[in-house]
Length: 490
Image 1 (spheres, one colour):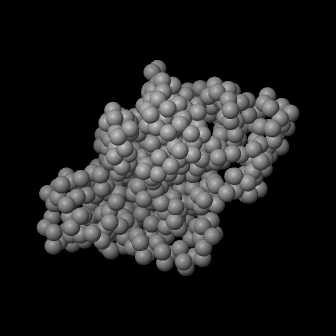
Image 2 (cartoon, helix red, strand yellow):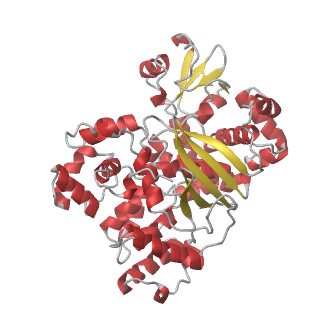
Image 3 (cartoon, one colour):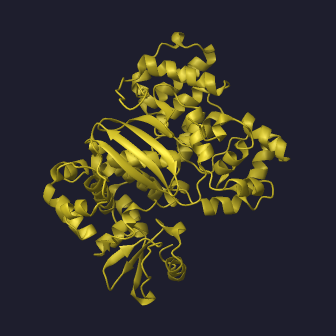
């Protein structure tokens, strides 16, 4: 979008927050870059330059605006919508892969050469992987500086910088302030009491309907791993350097996020997983605008605009849970998952609530005795087959996975049918066009609204909802009076 000067100019002049994260406005006279909704008086058009990423603006010598804080804007919705190399790379960079494995590690995960990955990112985003990762490190550093009392040396290494000098230079270059000055300017009371405990605000594009989003997560919560407590959805997180506990609560204009981490190097990755889980980078105006063109969906969209797709913090975890949920009730699926967690999950301490375990990884479940599972023999075989495929890499569901390849890998597993494949595509792979025409709740809603009743006819009708069919599913499910559609009450 950044190449369409007139469209970008209109967005800046109208301070349209819908375009935050789509592009960045750099002002040549002040050498500052902003988000489109920056509250200051817009500069003259001849002084504006538009960039596709914060990293590109930083590389061109611009520093972040202190008023609108462009580094904290929602991410571009393109990276969830698209499934190409650039989108997959951006999801992996947000998850911290470059910091942990370097650019060669990023390229290996994508299945391309390092040179090809760098060339495509530079062509589309104006920055190479290292520059994009550097911009993310700067944002992580600012969060730690402003929300903790950690010594600056600890902040530097937790944010992923190789040295304190690089940390100091980057913060000064990006924010035009030394780290100590950033901390002094932070809002009173912003610092948290305990190291590792962070209070953050996760931004999103308006509108957002929290009912089905938090209702689904709470209604399907696995005992010991997830819970609804004091108006917040809480869950444990298995992270590269340790584990964490997050509490997420809807607030006007943002999501309140309370993170407790055993290793602060996991901060950026934990935030990325929370944003994916709540689908916070979605563009509801685009989604609802298209779905409302269908006269059947239009009243549902008007009634509760901004529905998101409740996703997952861990794709492998959800794949296991999807098999456990085949042909059983929500309560039964929770019971089966809870037993797996108790038997195989790593125990953790949660002084603030009732969480007890991490969900076991595929490797931890690899030694599972299927005879201990209280389910039909065929589903036991499906579950152990899924676990084995995840453990040995035959099925790859990471954030940078190729969605169509993952679908084919899943479909090749015995007992994994189209419903399971599409559920995993929707909630684990984040495909906004995933569709479950055989789902009982979806078919019941379709019949109630006068939509085609058979799966084949429903698929044909759903063509008008593409590429947002996963969101259409949320609106259709919401016609049922099921706990997944209601914000929990304490």
